[in-house]
Image (tube, rainbow, N blue to C red; front, side, top):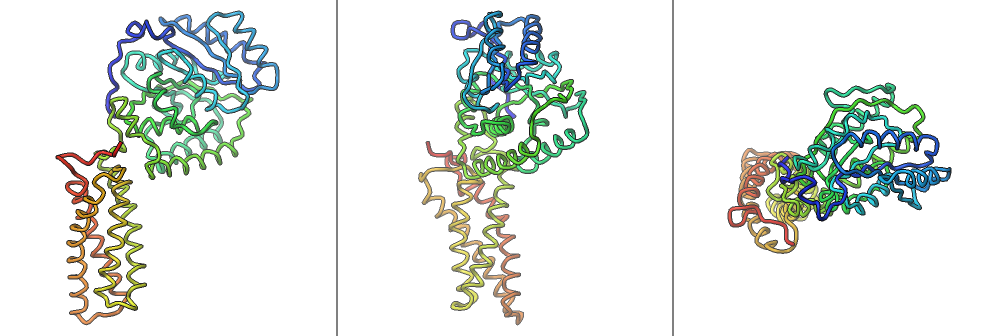
Length: 409
């Protein structure tokens, strides 16, 4: 990832930021443990060299949590309370973080499973401007974790799933110990749709795609035996969240490139993005196009000759392939230069037509006219042409003035 823009620390924003660090503790029915946890957090924050605030985000508690929270706010000047009418950790964090005047925003679980000694290394890179987000990791090298084998297995499998489906590179999505710079939060949070447990994962994936730097801190972590999290329901919600987020990124509905531009970062999904990402997306589009070509060829082989069916199937799939790669692989949106891109795509198509027609001619010259053999040979030829098409698209079709075409604004 690209380095974060330098930031001179709390003194540079003294006129606009009254608090350097705000710690948000989302709670639901925590009347028993809330006071002791908040006092522990306040005692630890007193050892840090910054102005601080603790915000208790009451997620529609039905017990005496609200009473305890108000008493803490009256007792300690650095404590405030926000009451929400609906449950949801993500909802609580979005509301409190977006309304905060602090420079760096933190959240931690009320059970304080994470050792508070990790707080300083968590926030220091954000205050210095070195990083944009920071997360506590229970799976990173140097972390010490005490929890049952069931939760350990679920956590590791979930993070492996994120790596395989959303290409996540962070090691621990769900540890309740995270921090974010306020300027970054204002840009990324409006894109986060989930209001519950998937909020963490969605925030981190979007941040990665926007080219933001995520700092990981190994933590000492002890499992809370009284946790009320429904593991099965949460897992199903997370799977639905992965599918929704994946569709949003593939379709271009989530404007991470715009966020990257406003923050001065290089988006991993921008038109000139990482080669590996482009190859993966191009391959997906290519597989779909190849299958569509085979189906169209067989459908048209009856009323048309082999050469005619090949021509029509290639034209239709080439138009669709160019449009899909324009949007999904190379991140070009809007109608600007769309005709030019299709014309250039058709030039590449003509080369591909020559290659596949030549393969078909050689097949017939050898006395093989079976339709199955035709499909096999033409499909193989198209796979070779696909490599040539990717190089042409990357270096010429979607290139303008020496650079890949930028998405229309």
